[in-house]
Amino acid sequence: MYTNHNLATDIVDVFDSFLASKNIEIPCADPEEEAERHKNEKGSVSVMEETLIKRILPHSIEAEQSVIGSMIMNKDAIVTASEIITGNDFYQQQYGIVFETMVELINEGKPVDLITLQDRLKEKDLPPEISSMEFVAELVASVPTSVNVKYYAEIVSEKAMLRRLIKTTEEITNTCYLGKERTQDIMEETEKKIFD
Image (cartoon, rainbow, N blue to C red):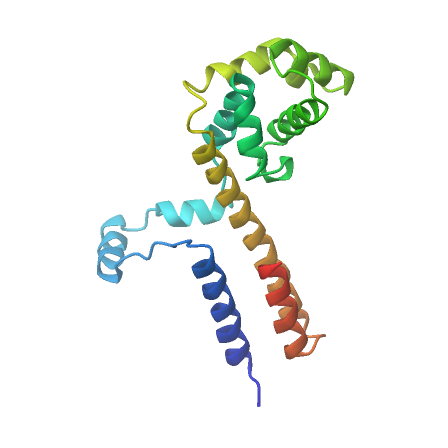
């Protein structure tokens, strides 16, 4: 007989396989250190508990800004970044819009610089805080060099993957609580969502 314990174990195994296939390591705290830390806190809210309360999704604003800044500085950085991420991988929607706009320009064979980018952003009828020269110039100023764009893009990609995993686990949890689907169907859907 297939129990809830079996289902939970199988889902954990699927996630472990996925994380291993992507070389993602989730640090585990030493139980003794955790116990000592909790003992010393004496009722105060721990950093982990505070993070869980706030429920802030994984992201790196610095990496997102650095990707965009690098792409404005160097045409080759646009190609490099677009091979790793898409506009949907950005946590900040405005950066995703700027990213997609630069990819559009490069695909059309047009130059990408502060002027052409601002002009295209204005054509899209976006709010001034996104299409202004100041916003675009600040993104360029946020990164010292475009050489590390691959590294920045990989950070953005990894954070986006973690957000998708969180969304998937929430969907799976809700499906399990509803109890309307067969366990085998839930397992198959879980594998499909994680590995596709």
